[in-house]
Image (cartoon, rainbow, N blue to C red; front, side, top):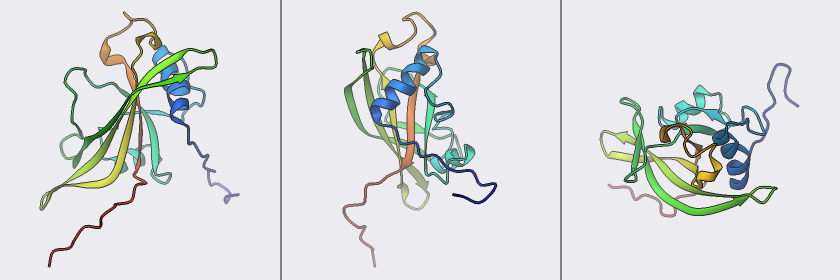
Length: 177
């Protein structure tokens, strides 16, 4: 139990299926998610990851979930940059495509996940990894949207999980004498 006046932090660690079915799918269909306020509407590329989490009171938790406008389609973007002065870019790391989640009613929602790593600009060495990662979840099944003709493509949402990487470096960097 915390001290008087301290807010008790609730653990929020949904599975990928829960993210897609209980948060992203309702957002796309115009409904409220199951847990209000658990996912913040904000562009994760508008600031460095630590600044983004600080803006939304999530820095102490160390991770956050965000609804963001889906990036334009076409050639896959390899980098998602922070604004000028933001100090870095989200660089494409990996994809997990053609995933499926099934609702309680048996509706199948197809989705994909794209992972990005945040690289900071280091004027001495170019760019360097900061250890921050973003998993971007996108429903790829148009039947999960309100209507096929409802809104422009830019109004569709993705759900992003921004966090510190839990992966340890396999090789320590060698030091130059």
